[in-house]
Length: 137
Ligand code: FES
Image (cartoon, rainbow, N blue to C red):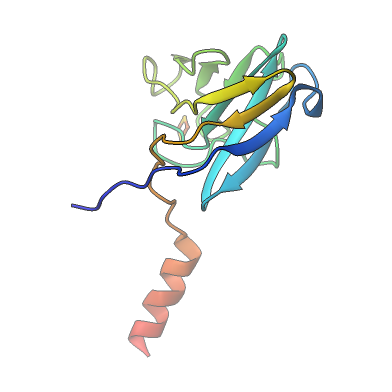
């Protein structure tokens, strides 16, 4: 069994004004992709992993929301998730949740809290294919 990794230190995420209302940003920490969404005067962050197939939710950089900006939408099969809870309310993984990231707020600034478990690092299909080719040579 592989031990899960934990985030040892708090990591700055963003300031409230870094994200416009109804928009989102993405980033990578310790090889794990994540995104953050602003709704009202709050920031919500999730690991960029769809509970349906385990793939990233977005096809375009920083695009995670539905057209009406009221829900997070997976680009692959259209699952819709509540912004503030991560609950899938429509789609093939209905009833499942996105993996929320614990944040700490200090005034307008949000940091990713230390001590929380990191999801497994995503598998790079390209790197895997290249390694398979090298093995066959
Ligand atoms: S991979 Fe997200 S809905 Fe299928």
